[in-house]
Every structure is written in structure tokens, then in C-alpha cells.
Image (tube, rainbow, N blue to C red; front, side, top):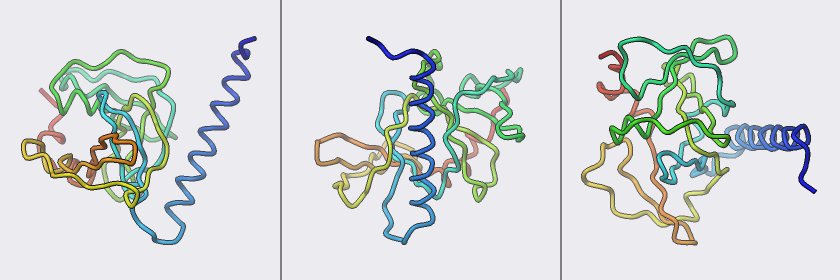
Length: 177
């Protein structure tokens, strides 16, 4: 028999709390380095440096902003802070944004990056360790903030995103048409 909706929500909430606790522990734990959050963006497996992200939040109600780029989804109230939400896959590939699905989450940028922004991801896959991966040749055609690639033991290709470089990119900062 399938679990009821409240039970599933409770398990999902528990999972999110545990993942957030693990992320916080990884940030404050001993500096072993190489701990990244695995996510799916535009069908690609990506790695986000834990020092560059703040938290994972469920999708929030968005207020559209007129005369903005198609990849700029709008503004959300996240913990009382007005935050711009970006479809990073659409920004990178210039394609329309994917429809909303149940696995999507918004990941807010760390305050140290000084940009109240959240990235919409298709799925959160949990912590990954760079020490367990093999670095591959950088993608020459990709922007510097997303050119690093790694393969894990299972042969899965991961693209490491440098969000500090991304938030300094003029095209990313120009959300207006």
C-alpha cells in the first residue's frame, strides 16, 4: 500500500532537515576540503561548493518581474529576504525554462557572495567528495565558472560550478532586457 501524502511529506521534510544538518556540519567540520553538493541542472550532474551556498529551500511563490531575461524567474520571499530566482540551465543554454516538477528546489547563494539570489535546480543529490573523483580536461568552450569536470567511480560526469565567478559575470548580473 502506498504511503499517504502526509507521511511522504514528513519523510521528505526529515530528509531535507538531515541534508541541511549534514551541509552545516560539513561547513563547520574539519577542513578536509572537496565536499560539494550534488545537484541536477538542465539534465547535467553538477557540483556546488558548500562555502558558496547557503541553504536548500522548497519552491517559493514567485513574483514575475517585467522586462527581464527569460532565465530570471522572478522574486521570492525566502526567510523575509527578497531573493531573485534564476533558472541556471536556461541562462547557460539559452533555452526556455523547464516546467516546475516536484523534485525541484531553490538553492540560495552564501552571503559572502553578496547577491540575494537562488538557483533553481531539478534535483538535490546530496554530498559528493572531490577526493573520490577524477578531474577531467576542462571544457574549452564553456565559461570559466563551469568549465571544470570530474568523473566519479561509477563513470558519472560532474560539472563543478564556481558560483563566485558566476556572480561576477556581467551577463548574469544584467537581468533586464
